[in-house]
Image 1: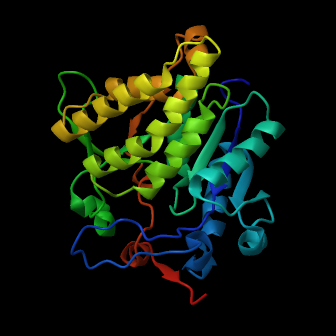
Image 2 (image 1 turned 90 degrees about the horizontal axis):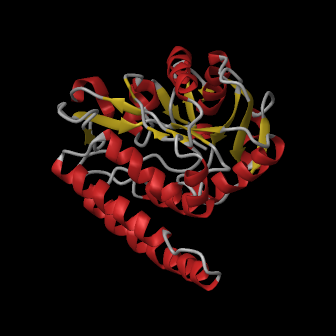
Length: 313
């Protein structure tokens, strides 16, 4: 695949079965269910606009919609529908398995369907991706200013990241666009981690660390035991724990460097064999100013700020 090839894109259309974590005492109203189908902007379903804007960027081909057929079939005329209705991690696994089968050897992009991406912004960030490829995982972080810039999303927790040693930390929100090389990933761990990261989104760092590590450790220990039985080095538990604790501590202190975060994610999420074969490859977390990638709709107040209405259904 050349550096300018179009990537297959999976738009995730699953359901928020539980409301997003909100600050205590905040007078906010969480949106649940299949948000991309129930939220309407100027009378049009949000999913329709997400797909339209993704196509308008000219960056992705083909585009897949991963969600339940009974909900999204009317909105999927111009995309391939992957019928899935499990947890966030299950939907990623189901969709990625089918797309990898159709596009062997290709990197794959993911986007959630609860944002309104700007086509020009997508072109700009993907131009940065093509300049930095090949890489194992690419995930933009969005620089934010004060609460006024975020509007109704000002309640979302931000993370302080030091772009380079010696520089001041900048506040970022996670973008909702991700590109992965499936052949490089520890996919079983990645599916579980994506699920845990999604369910603990908008929570404090300490809470997220405790929930994620306590859920991952038993499976990692079992994985390492199997490696011992086959005379392979048991490296997963140590690499994930070390990286996770380093990242959590750096985020709490406010001195986590981008380099340290990228390194921790590479050791945790990328296969040891792949890292050895490709020592030059990286996990890349570019810091961008494309705010539309960060403003996901978790509350009715955020929906109203985007002129979106929640349909009665």
